[in-house]
Each structure stands twice: as C-alpha cells, then as structure tokens.
Length: 348
Image (cartoon, rainbow, N blue to C red):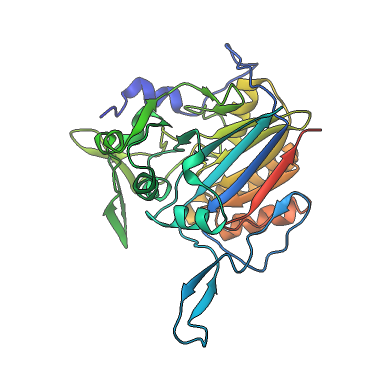
C-alpha cells in the first residue's frame, strides 16, 4: 500500500501558493455538459424543475405491492448516504460520458439509472473522488452488469488506504477497496497523483489538491489510516480529487465527491491549473456537517459568495447548517439537490 511519507504529507499541508500553475493545463472548452445525480442523500419527488434543471418523475418505476388492488405501486428513486453522478460533455458533434463515484450500496446507482432510462454501461470511464466506501460501493452493481469488459477507472494511488473511525458510537474499520478485485472484474485501474485530462481533453481530474486556505482543516482526529505498522490521524484524505469542466464562455464547473480537500481549496486549485478564473457551477458534497466542521462554514460561505457561481448544488455530506447558510447567502444560485436531478449547462 502506498501510504505516503512525511514529504507527501508536508507538501499537502496548507501553504501559500501564488501566481498561475507552473505547467498550466489546456482544458478544452465544451459546448454542453449534463450532470445527472444518480445517488445523493436526498430524494424529493416534489421538487420543481426549472430552466436547465430537470427533476426525476415521481413514478420513476413500479414494484409489486399486494396491498393495492392492482398488485403494484409506483416507486421513486433511492437515496442513501453516498454520491454518484453521470457527467456527459459535448464538444461539437462528439458526446462522451464519465461516471463520477458510484454511491454507497451495490444496487442504488444501477437501480436509479434504470429508473431514469440511463445506461451505466455506456460510460467511457469511471472516476473515484476518493476511497471511502460511500463513493465506491456501487462498483459491485456496475461490475455485475458489465461482466469483464475493460473499463478505465481513474483513481489516486492512495485510494487503497486502510482507514477507520474511532469516535464514540462510530468505532469501526471502513471497508477498504481491493485493487486485485477491481482488476479481476475488468476495471482498468489508472493511478494518478497528478492532474489527468479525459475525454479528448475536455474533463480534468484534479489529482491531489493544494491546501491553501486557513479554514479548511480536513477530517477530525477520529478519522485514521493504517501506515503499515500503526494507526495515525488522517486529516487530509490525500486521495481526494474533483472533476472539472470548462463551459465555453461561462467558466468552470466543479464536481466534488465529499470535497475533503475543502471546496474553496478545490476551486482555487482548478483556477490555477486551468487559468480560467470564473466559477460557473459547483455541485457535490462539501463535507461541512457536524460540530467539527461548523467553524469552516462561515468562511466557506463568504468565499463562495465572492466567487458568485451561477449554480450551486451542495449535496451528500454538506450538512444542514451549511445548506441553510449557503441558501441564504447565495439564494440566486443555490439549488436543492436530489437523486435523479439533471443539470444541463450550455455554452454562452
């Protein structure tokens, strides 16, 4: 297991970074991006749609139910403590799709895809934001569907890190991903610490994110990793990475899994890597839930207010306090997330 040495940890700690990237990345602008949330913590069938935002229908599927005269009932989508998004980009006449994370359970992601009429086997690659099981559990359901047909999977080398939680009432080992098992199921595992360009250069995977803010501290001491000889605190979750798209004339779209590196760190990192200053949209988990993260809410809200995205969809692990604060401060851009919602973003 690649657990990283002292230099790796030191390089990832908060530090001052100025100017542009030494080796800037030419992220090709796209004409359209469609992001469909396949799994999120919430499913609300009564949320209204609006321009560019389509909600899943209440009657997304059917199930046997003998208590009804017809013997069946209408069902919606599954929600769970996890995240998965289908990201489709279009440049000219070329359209390609990437699956970003896969949710918590083996069946939620594929079940929701079925009920939405989407084919999870049609993706060109899978990207894992990090190794936590609530983002990788759905790989089992995907593998069961697709057999052993090769499918690229982009991960950070420390996605295999063994971790545990030691908090009162939550003292357990986290399920650890197995590279051997995934390779055996046909996934072509690509390990990258550095940024990666996918889909003809139109999707950027950040790799390790520079930690530059003073208020995004990562996970509490109860989150630990196994070094090979002992357990130690794992605040950084160094394998955390995000997905970035540049919508022509609009700016950057940032999709996070949990945002363990910090939403503001991730956005600034993306701006430096690409040289694109404008944030068009931010979607995904921001990991601001619970008492430990409460001091980070106000400065995060302030930074995002200054960035003024056109669309803000915090989900998954963002937490209710942060959701309320973000909704109040960015009322024109904040949108309630829900499993099955589709966001369509077009070039200017």
